[in-house]
Amino acid sequence: MTEPRESAALEAAARREGVRLGVRDALSREVDRTSTETLLLIVAAGGLGLAAAVVAVELFARGAPGIDPLHLAVCAAAWSSMLVIAFALVLLRVGSPRMPVAESALLALVGLGLAGVLGYVCPDPRILMWWMDTPIGRAAESALGFQASTLCMGLCLALIAGAGAAVLLAVRRGSDPGIHLPALLLFVMIWPAVVVQSIDEPLVTFASWTLGLAIGAWLGVAAGAVARRAIQRMRPTPS
Image (cartoon, rainbow, N blue to C red; front, side):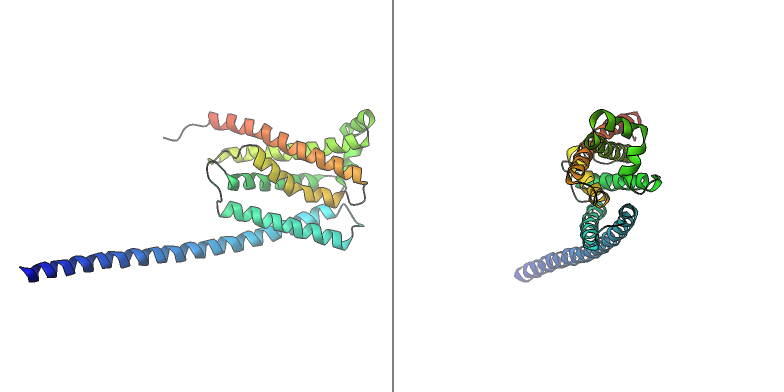
């Protein structure tokens, strides 16, 4: 009786060892696959971020012909760093339902894209100069002063970008990014354009433009969030 028991125990131990080795090998393959995918996504994020930064600098720097090369280089480096991080957050799906970082970064990227489109279609490469020639810009300057008109321009730009991005993303079924985090990221994404465009302007103009951009980013994302929730409520619930 002793030999059969010992044989059964050895077989059971061998089976357990085989299962352990199989699980270890499976986990090792999964780690290798996940690591490769993560590396490829990081490389893709780097490429997308650098390409987006080049396009953004080229678009907004055309409105500042006398810009210092060092100033432009610093803006380009900061912009590319932020864009690489934002694309990495989106591609790697960083975050959770309680902290939807990836959704917030995606909204900010879409908002930057909309701001870039507005800058591209603007008749004057100096957005501020174009704004001051519009009826709204002239009226704001006449009633409130130049700095208040500049603040209004920054507010309108970020308002359109934030609300438009939130509405465009309403077609996606994802976590609600809320307001504060995407508004902050949107401001950070667009702000280098203000730095580049206001290089020849007084510091107070730069400050008022920055303040308007910050307020507009929050209001735009908030307005877009309301529209987003309304659109999603109208969508049929998947069965």
